[in-house]
Amino acid sequence: MQPTTVIYVLGTAGCGKSTFTAAAARWLDSNDYSVQTVNLDPGADALPYEPEVDVRDWVTLADIMEEYGLGPNGAQVVAADMIALHRSRMIDELAVDEAQFIIVDTPGQLELFAFRESAKEIINGILPKSSVLVYLIDPFNARTPSGYISQVMLANLCKLRFQVPTIELISKSDMMGQEMREVLTRWQEYPDHLGDDVMREASERPTMETELSIGLYRTMEDLGLFGAREMVSAGDERGFERLYQTIQLVYGGGEDRERSA
Image (cartoon, rainbow, N blue to C red; front, side, top):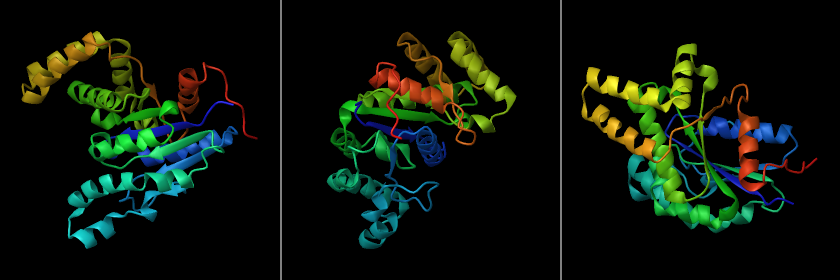
């Protein structure tokens, strides 16, 4: 039997990580795959799914703010490191031998997970050899050439940090207008068009951001970091079949996983 796959959902604040987690869990369950969800956001007020493991059982922003006299930002930083201290408890509560997929919903602020050593400890402690990152690109932060380039850069920084297979997706596809969809599709299919557009953007709006985007574009083009990214929607579950197939290519040789039911 293929071992459990752990899916870490990452992305900038507001990209739809929790909604994606809920939709992915529903899709897997409806296709007879056993799945568990994990919430790693200690500041989440409400979640669109019922997690099997919830870090708020041990760490909450409100408790940290009260105990240490910190504001919300400081409490987030402290919480990010405290979560790693409860790694063993989280593993104990996960029925790893029973679930085929474990979806981990990471904190809202990307930097609090992606760029702190505590996150590496969590990933290395929960089936690191069968883990995958799913990075959600928020299309509304990628409407401009420089915005799109910065999103792709962040996704690849996460891949570099954790050294596990990474799947980049464009979220909220059901909320995009036709024009935005066509632009994002064109940039993916023809990266040289993205290069032309970022040059034009820098010419029309010369700022440090747009000038930096030109350098980033050239570097990422040399490294081959541009390419197709599946558009997904938590609303109508568009793209989840392709996501499942991609994960199976990484860890199952492309063969379908045995159904749990």
